[in-house]
Image (cartoon, rainbow, N blue to C red; front, top):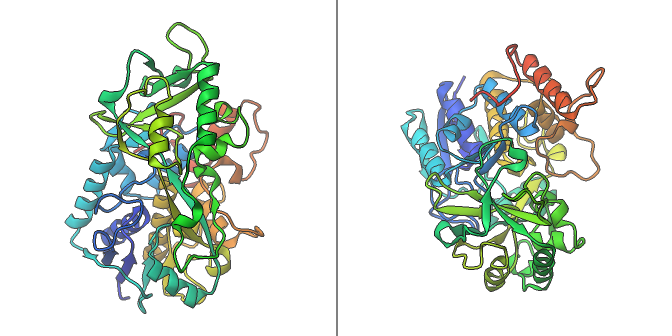
Length: 440
């Protein structure tokens, strides 16, 4: 068998697939268009650059994200081990120093003798075995090609990212360190709002000047309808749903009492962006506000009155394909069986989900993998992308709701989730699965 393959896209899915296939003896040509051609959201030329957040979500096995990580490691994934070596404090979440993570991924790719990294935009689909992992910011030229080859079966949505502020500009007299319900180390900084402060903040969000969607369209996308993906909804759009939406969602105060034991009216959390803790992300504050409005409005947050912004929040176009209509059950295109689809362009949402997608496609190609147990989240994500019967296909992330029901389900929600995880890992042959964190 000719063990040569092209991978287009050096994001999480493409790099995971490249490393797995290379270690399986495949010769990999990995194409990445940056820095020859940048995207509206990336800021470096590194492979696997994390854009929207530096968090890969929870590590706990009583969470869907923690279970998915454990499944990926059980299946031989590579990138999560790199992520673990770049951790920054984030309580029970796996958050990384994003620059260090990208640098280490690129170093691993460069050190692999079976991978040749080529910095070049690919505008046409190759005629040899290929993994298409160009991600949600696929270039216009490639989208044109896909449109011509596959027909108008594309769906689009906007994505927003949150601001990052300089640590030295935080007023520590007004904030406090605490993880929700004290479940982990006090890795988050908390900005507590009174009712008056919260209402003023919400009103400012509603009145703030924002970018219009048409400003992000171009000739190719003109006239197409764009929607926000629910998990990346801008904070000002959430505020429009009702005055209490934020404090019952991204700014909920439960479990975040102030040092004097009082419950705030609302809380906005800050998460470290790097290992040195010189920069902090405004959790849940993805936005499409104009920069001037961001500076004024986010300085209304208690403790951030003098905030200096290292990165303003922004909005960019994300794309995904109608995978169930286009793909066979092995992730290859029905119209182009030598081309396989992986990553967010295939319709998974989330960093770890993209890693899992790249891993599964690599195992399909390298080992002829035909399925994964229905009891696993990664197996159910596979089924959603290739066989879902939803009338309108939507991106999906890891959640326990996609798993088959348990027999004699316990009433305790945490116990139920732990049973899901134990069943899943046992189905993958991890018979020593236990409570706690995933095994890195």
